[in-house]
Length: 247
Image (cartoon, rainbow, N blue to C red; front, side, top):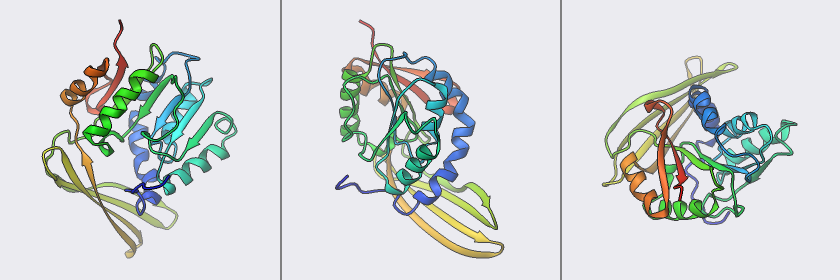
């Protein structure tokens, strides 16, 4: 894909490791929603599929579904494609697309969409395009499942250690903090360190902007497109279904 400014160009090598905890914690809640999707209504789209942890969950939960996994970041897509290829169940059922969600060649009818930890990459104008597109493509009974990660308003996020993992002789540590960047955005500052014992092997500093979205804003944006918003699961998950309103 041309013209894509990849926020994970430097951090993509660490993302799959450090997002695994989110999927482990919320997998059952996401799977409960997936089981409500209609069968044989078109492929289920995994938007911003990353390294494929969510793709694997979708395929495992919906054993007959075809999955379209969309991931524009090259390092993340490399992990995704390898994960799909090495699994004999995923290989015939999962198609990997390297465009971003707004540029991807989606089928006219989709049986659902999962967008985990993704919505903040889209500006209000881009989200409006997304809701318009979903309103025409979602099959009857299908919905988009997305989360609204904290913070949902621009605010200062104290810098904290978000993850620490060990692989072989080395530990991988991620730090995150954010500051407001206008009335609707925050600027994240992430640090990824690789250590072996007391020796620092590498440190990568990553900065990117994130559009904050709260439930009220999500509802206000979806309603003009004939879409309704329904919370799903525990409040701390921040998960919502976006679905076509019944006529």
